[in-house]
Amino acid sequence: MPNVTQIYIQQYLIEVNYKMERIKNIDDNYFFENYKDITKRQKASPRSVIRHIALDFAALIFSLINKRQILKTPRIQFLYIHHIFKDEEASLIQLLQYLQKDHVFISYSDAVRKICNDDIDAPYICLSSDDGFKNNLSAAKIFQQFGISACFFINPEFTNNAESFEKTKTNCISKLSLPPVEFMNWNDVNSLIKKGHEIGAHTLSHDNLAKISDADFELDCLKSIQQIRQNCKEVKHFAWPYGRFFHFSESKQNIVFNVGFESCASAERGCHLGLKTNNYKNLILRRDHIVLNWPLRHIEYFLMRNAMKMQEQNNYFPNVSK
Image (cartoon, rainbow, N blue to C red; front, side):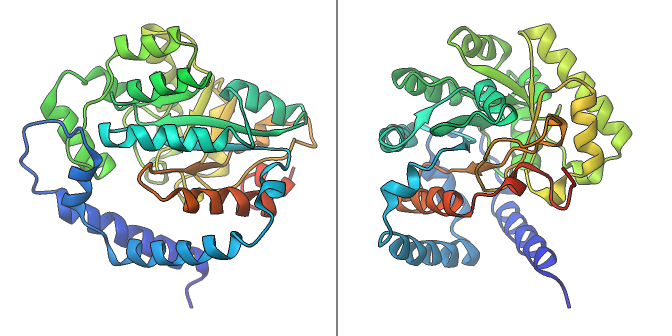
């Protein structure tokens, strides 16, 4: 009998293959600028429809609970997006207005520092974005309105080839299951730093780390650090592509810290208490993925569930001793 993890992996692969079938024959010669145009191409999979219904029901149940008290629980909650298309900008503003009612926005480095120092005295929200799409510049402008410093995780090879439509299109389809979406160039990345944001590493070209050796991964990390430092400034933080625990390993976690990164982030849901040990190299950050066209009640459900299920083990890779 397959276990729960095996079942989830099978469902995940079915979802990815479903998206790939929808976009693999795309011959568009332009960059997509609205998310609704992408969702029209991909259409809703049966799994996503069931998920939406289940989340509606869960959100209804959680609406009966004293949510204000739960959301004010001291903790650090990482949230991340991939994109902010033109038709998603209003949703980002609405989300940030909602979040600031019960939370304090905090920079990525400050969030990591507070976890490591066991200094969590308020409900904190930390924002980041993965993959380095050019529309993240719009997110940065909105973040600035709210006094938010975010961390933008980039793939240097995507940034290097940002001026090539064909290479960008290939990367979007093969690595991200998306039609062509423009990436930031190095001038764009540097503009984020000037506005007080941080830049993180997301591997050179968004590879599935479960499929590469530790030696190749270490080389990838070193090259990522080198290219980011050459083109902009320091890089402290790492987030692995695709983000699930089954895409990573404890040995690769050790490599992340050995090459000089100060944090290592997943895309697993959850939030954080402070570390009860001085060994910050065991810390794995959990980040909740958000798509800005999701109903706000679904995002609120995840925030409440995370706060209610918060435990020290969330700070570590599964089954890792502290």
